[in-house]
Image (cartoon, rainbow, N blue to C red):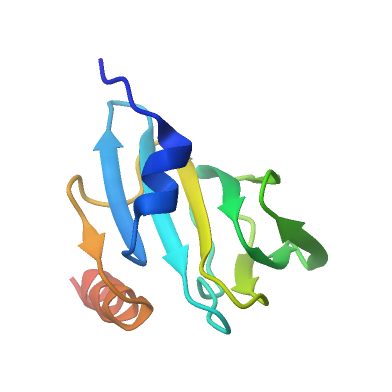
Length: 125
């Protein structure tokens, strides 16, 4: 069992993606998206819940767009296409829960470009 102040960890995170911990049926990941960047249009075969702790942006989930800001939570059911874009002037900081886990335990991608390259490599394997 781990006890963490999740909002503080998310605010301190400077990596595009950082797996905080992985359990048997779930995973918590921190993300920091630079102004003008996005997470990337994607679809997971797992459920995902995102909680935003800093910044503003646009959520695109299942073809529907909504404005998002600190304090918002977005539920993305498995197999739903989604993207999140930072439309503000500061990093969009969040934590996300995948159930079950989506990324290898210990994963850190410092930038979006690094994450895209790693995911391309994973899908080739």
